[in-house]
Amino acid sequence: MKYRIAVEDKELFAKYLYKEFEYLSLASFGEEDKKEICSLLCKEFYGKNPQYPIGDGIIKWFYSSAVDDNGVLYIVDFGNKKFTEYGRTSCAAFAKAVEMQNAERKRMSEKSIGIKNNFSENSVVYKKSFIPGYKKCSFFDADAGIEIPFRFRVCKGKEKRPLLVYLHGAGSLGNDNLKQFLEFAAVGIKPEEECFVLLPQCDNFTGNNLSTINLYARSVRSLVGVLAASYPVDESRIYVVGCSFGGACAWYSVYDNKGFYAAAIPLMGYFPDADSEVFDVEAFRGAKIWAGHAKDDKVVPYHSDERACKRISGVCDIRLSLYEKGGHVMMKKFFRSEKWQQWLFSRTNRD
Image (cartoon, rainbow, N blue to C red; front, top):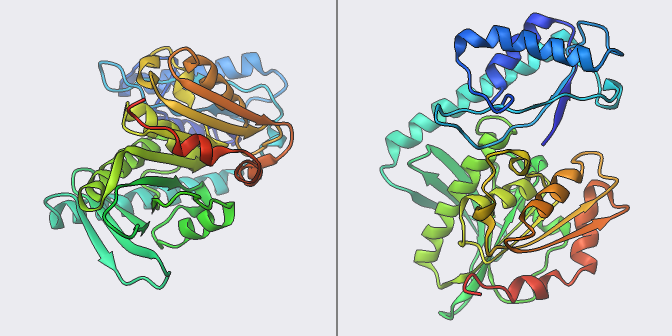
């Protein structure tokens, strides 16, 4: 996911860079290098973008999940578009955003400690549900120290059935265990084959970035394992579908769990690791992926999906549906008009 910010306070901008950047020119650095790096970033930015007066501090970046021997890598992409296309943030508003993010991290840190203290192993806690057909539960990942609220539709009988995992967009982040269900109902997914349906919800673990996405994808994989051990899930037919933020989660679910998911449909997603020099193409070998995006999507540009599909085209079954129109709600057109269910449910991880 690419972001752009604009602030006039260069010290505040630098402070934010120090805290937030996980990637920078494929080179790791220590605390003593940060000030110099920030100075170089600003110098390079203004050199490439003379139309901006010094002090705007406009920079575009994306997170990635790969790491070097020292545990951290950095990539920066300098922008050359007018910042007005992305909006302008005042120093006060930006400082407030940083403050809120720090408070959120503190909340999640305290919650994580509580989970690790109360759960010695991964556990599912069932709660009373008022939605017919869907169990209301929470999954406590004892290793990661996070809670994933989820809804779960159970098939009748003992016959093994496929499992469909739906990963929601950023608008459904939270822990109310409801927004992700309402989103699932709204996008128009109606499974034609009898199957288990898992609707997990991602809380804002570390902010809306790839650190959260990777942690979430790994915990969802653990949750699926717990459910598969308790219900007659056909483990050769576990599918993951996601939209927007969930589309990114679907990409990383496949990337981080080679051979586990039988097929994936990431829509309006993003996979910036495909731009990295250390990207492991082989992690996608044998995967089955159908990506979808609209060229006029102004929330999540389609280029990340397009580049990712090109990079892995030689090692897996990959298709990309690009619509000229559809914006950031193209998933409704996709689920309504494409024969995605026929494609999805016919795939197995034994093919």
